[in-house]
Length: 238
Ligand code: AMP
Image 1 (cartoon, helix red, strand yellow):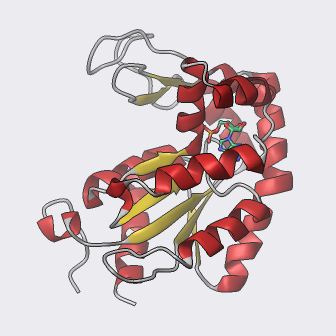
Image 2 (cartoon, helix red, strand yellow; image 1 turned 180 degrees about the vertical axis):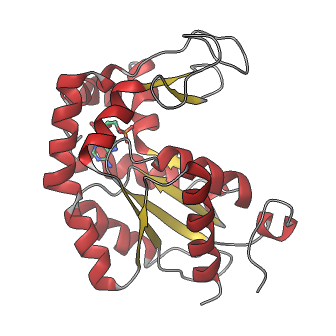
């Protein structure tokens, strides 16, 4: 089968199924998710983004999640699973989706396995393709403390590695860039601890199932993207 690429419209009708991006906060899951989403025309489902949207709209879920997110902890499963189930049942999920930030605990992964046991993609059942993006602790710290984003078009910058042409404003639309509240140093330390304690065990979980692909997330973004897309295209031929 031909590998998927941006000039290949077949990738826009293919059913790559569920794709899980694992990795610490700052590993580049969001960036890679956007590239996959654009190529396949499937949604990027970022549980962090959905929660932040609920916080901004002051929904019941948002009010409960806000203090937990501010402290760098994980939102409990009873809130997460209903939210995710609702999202995965939307019509745009029929060919597949990219999970960015979910699952984050073994409990969530087990729930997802049972959800996927009943789901069809392009008419067939599919095991998830799991990509673990690996980045060293020091690199993560710099990525997170330096991260800024455009609230208008979602473009992500880093004041150390990838600064905007003009300080503090988006290259594409001129909007003032913002820093996520939880990208402050004290909260970052907590988020990385939550990751090590609760999410890192997922590497083992999916490793045992034989669906895990580990990737060096410190290479250039384009290189990581190329490898990620290769892994997904290969999995689709199995
Ligand atoms: P993120 O944007 O993925 O870094 O998520 C931001 C915050 O949202 C996390 O620090 C958690 O508080 C919360 N969150 C996002 N996804 C999950 C999840 N799958 N389970 C529990 N909490 C989550």
